[in-house]
Image (cartoon, rainbow, N blue to C red):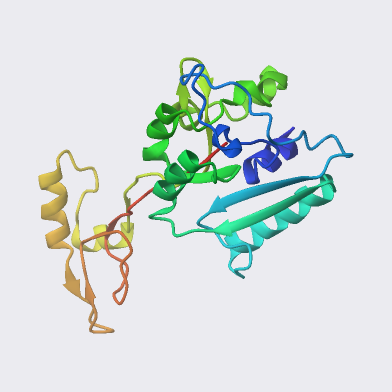
Length: 240
């Protein structure tokens, strides 16, 4: 069951957007009808092409690019009648480009968007609820495997419209050795206490002469690890 879910999470290529056929659903914009413009991949006698827009590049030799390329190859092996075309897009303009394409009938079948834009996609009626496609055939066990806060984030009126492919969670980590060195208790009760501790633990490393900051946020380079690190996070969502 995990293997099946992993394949769906990796590509979600068996299904299509309501915008794919060039028409926005107007009968019931809150719950669009199933899209019939893309053939069922299980029907091996029909040739199907699926267009994917993503900020990832399957030709990239990075880890993410390689995984996407492997998933594409795996899917096309599983469904020989399907050709998957992946077009890499600029991540910060991809969603707006998709919304424009949905109005002109040139939208892709599968789209990645920032999770914050999901509500607008649903409101425009350009995405297909999973219940109209594969989810109605899943067992309770299979649904529970992905049913978490992120899955519910894409729910409206009992219908689900997205699956998160990558989620970076907010969090704060700290170096216990530096806390011990300066005698600082990490159990802060306020942001003011954290700031005062960070100031106390900001120092110049005697061995390297490099500045060590007490608090770092985001992605920090050219300095030793800070005593406290609060990473910047984001969400990416695949929508059908």
